[in-house]
Image 1 (tube, helix red, strand yellow):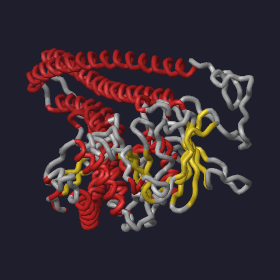
Image 2: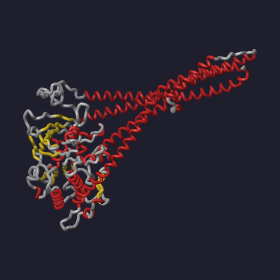
Image 3: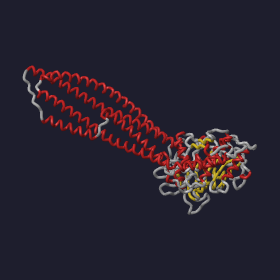
Image 4: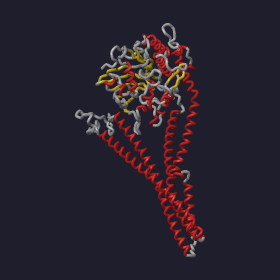
Length: 638
């Protein structure tokens, strides 16, 4: 595994064609220093943004939200790259990337490549591109399960707004902040997934979702088959073949019917009347049962169609939300000839397509969405009515079947009275005729069931395959977890040792410890729980406000320290901290923490730590460690 690195070398903020911020950064410790409320945090927020972070509409800071775009010169694995991103509140704009420095010019300079927030079959997302440049491209998962740069930066950027007891940057969307996601971020950056445990977990999730879908389809088929749900295709075919043989045998040996007297003729007439009733009731029962079989299928079809419509409606609403967020695409180059797209002074970009210059109807897309949405709602309402009608029809058929069964049973009981009045041949002929009719009707129903069972068997096999796949993946996860246990213990122990090294020496001016648990801590008392987003010292999560931030910062600093000598870390030897002085931090304690940083990284230059402070230590208040001057006015000069 390569030792991935990402370092900021230069950062530029543009407004109306002018640079309102343009400073160079360096390897090692970088300090953005200045008075309170001059915009130090704004710079770190914009760095987070240009690297792929997402800033919500209500989280933008003034005057950053009034600027046009940001540029950043990076060193990624010791190769220079320049990235650029438009500032668009409430949206997730693409990122443009090219190799070379910001000032590079000439024929050898690579043209810009633009990458959006989501991947497609034709192009990478900007997260995929960053992962590729950092050497992480072999660790992708399915579309919905990708780790993104935004998720990675939630650990690499310790911001001010997130609660002091939390490890990761806070998320508004709880679906993006599950325990599994947090654990995946940590395992990925700390190199705890060498056996692709994260990939295996995503494969397990996909397999379990497919298993649930197949199980639901099977349940629908079983409802159609009813009491015959256990039959197989082979059983049905054997039954049909057996019935055909029996029908042929019965037809080839018809008995003769003999009538000896007028009385017997009367009895036979009565018998035939009851037999006719039996045939009528039998046909009614068969027809009702056949109709019930069909209506059950119709009900299942309606239920599945409703599920499909609701999924399409949900997808449409998500598509509209994505379109409202992203807006029209703008091309810098013609997709046909690759030439630069020139803007026309005579066309209002808001009313025309900037590529083909055709008028754009502003409300057309919204109208199209509403038209499709209305059509889906209409189909849902219609389907609901049809489903209700079918259910009512089913209830009626079930009642009719019960009546037909009762009539048939009554007629069959009457016919038994006439059995002794006929000679054996006559009775056998009637019984055989009845049996032939029954067998023929049974074969018709069996043919219908064959069509369902044919699909049922394939679904059963698919379900068995999924059970085997799920079992295999779970075994692989257990095996991977066991193999990774030793490394996990070493990584957690290394971080805990550094945390203790930072917290133990913490003292007030009078020599007393700020927290007794900090002073007496040892590595066994440091519990790091990335899934639950917390770190405990001697079983405690919460301390005083300033102590919480010292504890929180010590964890991220410790992970950065460990990454310098552990090649299996993917953490790119880069960290931004904007919580040095939160929680009512006093200058004396802030200076002690800054001294601890200098001591921890002494003699090392293979990392980059960027932090902000208004209480800068004298040893750091210089050009060697500082980025730009000590700011007394706004950092962004607009």
